[in-house]
Length: 231
Ligand SMILES: [Mg+2]
Image 1 (tube, rainbow, N blue to C red):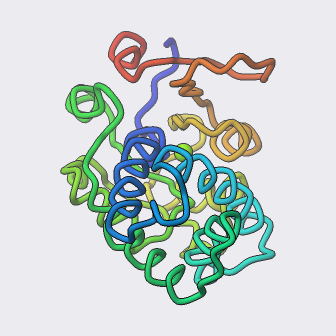
Image 2 (cartoon, helix red, strand yellow):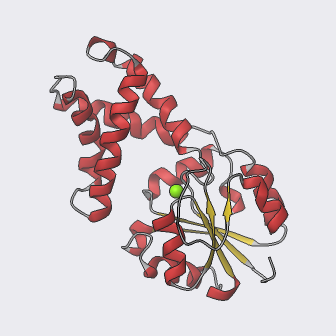
């Protein structure tokens, strides 16, 4: 890259912390811990149903039509409901279990540590995340990558979520950076890439699953290790 960047802002979930793997691990635990085989034939089916419902509820959370407290148990309530099990208390218990165990999972995307080791010598690294603060801090600590980052910007603290321009502006300010010497790297086109573009920040779209798309992007990578060649 020709431009001289000084600050790199990473998204956390699905960019560095392997959300999908980590989530699956905990859902497998839940399936056995709460004997869900009484209602659902196997863990894979449970996980698939949960993921669809969870995605839908997250969409509602992003739009502001559901509170985070509600989301935490509602996703399990609706999943169980699909199998004719209506149990509010069980859903709350499972929601609590998920919340407690999920952030403690330690799987990172391939090459996360190698790339952070490489980048930290050349750039100042930061995180901008839409995730809940208390949860994201556990993930960063459990997976051992907390110390790589100078600033961690939480949407909850700013009051708006990516792609709102305010969270990027706030991040730039807190990092003592400028739009021109900053780069955003993330897996979510709308939140990370479109969000960065709106404030004029360059970005790299991390398309780990190699989803085909027609999106307008500056640059795309499919593996984090590519960053060691281009940055
Ligand atoms: Mg993400």
